[in-house]
Length: 180
Ligand code: IMP
Ligand code: MG
Image (cartoon, rainbow, N blue to C red):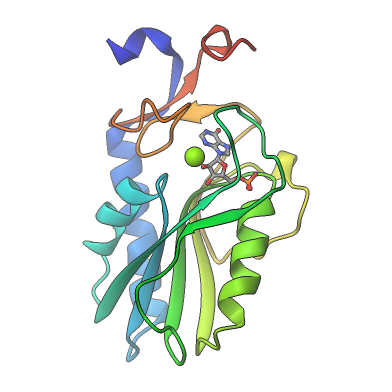
């Protein structure tokens, strides 16, 4: 049913699972002897976060934050608003911010600056997807799943107007769905 709005599949469930495992192995190796706090940026990263955290073999806590930078359109407004803040204190913690996609960089450059002010022991960014062609603000990425071209993608947590998050794979949305 959701399938008919998808132009093509970019990453299958199997490809996603394999890449998530690779990233988790890297994180596990990099943070040996440390405890980390995974910060999921809602809502887009909830699926990635759920899969990633179960592959990381380290003591870890999880927390969630919600920001809005988009209306229901497909391009960033540059305006970032925190709609749900973290529940816990992050000072002295090793933070790993988990995002679904890095696009213009507006959301993450704002968010990372804000989190740095709370004095974590360290802060790194893990994004499943990266669209470097669209970058407006520079953002340092430590873990990136896939670099993708400038197309609007949905599934595996990513939405268009809050829909398609439950697709198990990542697909390119047909432009006619969003009037493109
Ligand atoms: P940025 O502030 O422009 O980097 O936007 C980041 C946010 O925009 C992501 O967390 C997503 O919620 C959303 N976004 C950017 N590109 C896409 C896309 O292709 N599909 C779905 N959401 C996207
Ligand atoms: Mg979104």
